[in-house]
Amino acid sequence: MNGHLYKCLNNANRRKILYCIGKEEKCVNEIAECLDLEQSLTSHHLKDLYDCGLIEKKRKGKRIYYKVSEPEIIEILEKGKELGDRLEKRC
Image 1 (cartoon, one colour):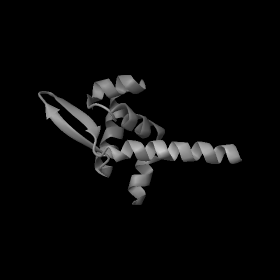
Image 2 (tube, one colour; image 1 turned 90 degrees about the vertical axis):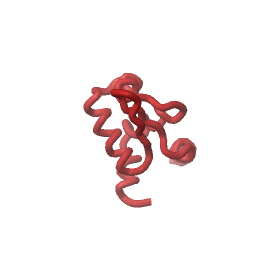
Image 3 (cartoon, helix red, strand yellow; image 1 turned 180 degrees about the horizontal axis):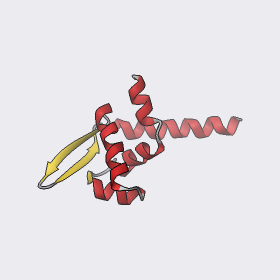
């Protein structure tokens, strides 16, 4: 994994976006509403996630829909959270 990918995953809003679109594709307005973020901030995070290769986008009419590029991404996030929770209990 390169440093840019770690930077993408290190942001809580970006991880929340991945969870939000993990099961179905959504447009930026739906994602912003899901996370209670401004549309401009959501768009910024989506660009970073797209640049990292973590999401794909597809135009449908006037809207662009986003989805996770690989289902394993959500599994990796969940495994990382589980590991973090276990390690936190040890401290």
